Length: 180
Image (cartoon, rainbow, N blue to C red; front, side, top):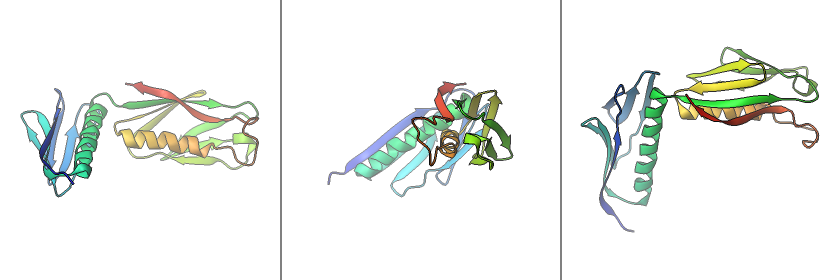
């Protein structure tokens, strides 16, 4: 196995964004909010030097090299989240029974899906807001993982069961990502 003696990755912090590291916990603040994430690993250190977040590793192998790249991607996503945010567009599609959607607390409620009496529910993760305008649904927030998981929860809640999916194509589907 080959060891790399030293590896660094630098991520620039744009204006209007502040970053702070305490015990490998990175906190990034921006105009849209604040995100915190733990990057603790015995061979990898995170520091803030000259308005840059620096990920530094010594005597690393392939797995630690991959972790440095993954950590850099997470930090870039955190910076983008507190500056621009993340947004997904979804659409309610039905041909048999009209679907009614609503947000109740931290749950997305889907009523009358395929004529079912009981409502289907999808969990909304923390920091995610949902706007409903007729058939169009917009999901947005600062944490990329929470926004994406909320969209997946909504899609999974409208999975067609015990029917021919070629005939019953009703559901709530992701149309695409949009930047804010």
